[in-house]
Amino acid sequence: MPPEEETVTSPLNDAETTRWWRNGRHYSVAEIVADGIVHGIGILFALGLGTVLIVFATIGTARSELPAIIVYLTTLLTVLGVSLTFNLAPVSAFKRLMARLDQAAIFLFIAGTYTPFLAILAGTPGIELMFALVWGAAIVGIALKLIVPQHFGRLALVLYLGIGWSGVLVFHSLATALPPTAFWLLIAGGITYSAGIVFHLWERLKFQNVLWHVFVVAGSILHLWAIFDAMVLSRL
Image 1: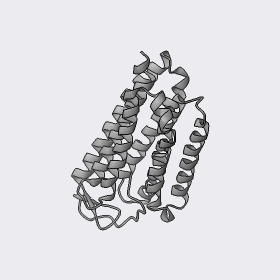
Image 2: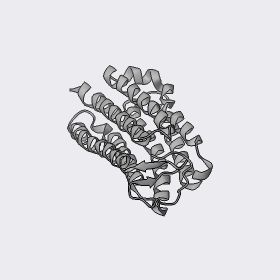
Image 3: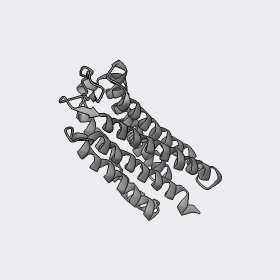
Image 4: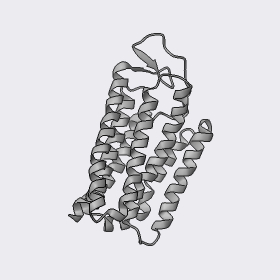
């Protein structure tokens, strides 16, 4: 996931670094490789635990919640795959396109993350409205990122956080419906994502993009485990 308001600069002439988006910042080969490894770990973990989750949900009590699980896993793999492609791509028109898709995918992933937790709350008053608000806001964010990214800028970060923490509106319902472990994993994941923004904005710090993605992958793993605990482990 890149910083906001990207402007592609000219490619470098040397093979040891690649031009970053702003402030003359360069990524070293070590940073690029480390970033790829972090994304790869996230993708492998999502595929591994995700497969186990789907199998248990198919044969267990979470069968009716299987579509919500698939939505989460699909959006998780999408955001990691698009982010990996963007960050490894050389400066080009393709990279500019991937920058838009990368930031749009974050909105998709946030809404996808809410989906299984709201599915657990199905039947609770107001949950349908919450579902509509989360996905509606995400769709608006996706449209803005794809159509007018140059006019959206850091406002996107505010919207990311706003949608991400809108779950406080159903805090009591989540605390009541989720097993304690799943609930605290959910909270820990949200805090992890938010803490990672420090590195997302600290553009001059070496390996800042890698550190940002470490927090993203860690947050996604915490939430994936929360779903696994809520829909499988707590029901065994």
